[in-house]
Image (tube, rainbow, N blue to C red; front, side, top):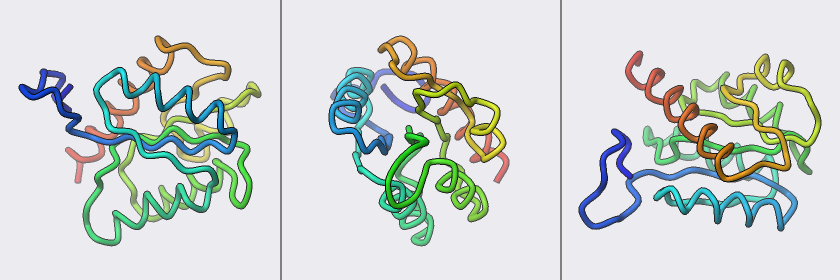
Amino acid sequence: MRIDGSSHPRGEALFRVLVAEDDDANREIAARLLSRFGVEVAEVSDGEAALGTLLGAAGAGVFDVCVAFIDLSMPVMGGLEVARRARAAGCPVGLVALSGADSPDEALEAGFDVFCQKPFTGAELRVALDAGLAAWRRRIAAS
């Protein structure tokens, strides 16, 4: 699927999403489900690596990740801190909070665009992906 929602003629992914999740099984499930929607998925297992992926591209003036699915409870740096730092740096990526706890208000205040409760379904991830893409598009258009 193209960013504009149309099909790509060769079936190639035209944008990337990041899945930052310390639990291997949850990360693999999310990545597998998201890849079914035609996106390329990058995976990391801690918050510091997630922030590095988001801001490393920003430092080069390139945002090749459009949406990041970030677990709130990870080692090294939690998802809330990743969101705060990414937003402080002006990162336009759509941020989706993944959490087993019911804490959407805290996630949204930290800079997340969407809250997705674990365990999640493929349909819930699709809704979160679409909302994250819409947030990314708004930020890109405003810049």
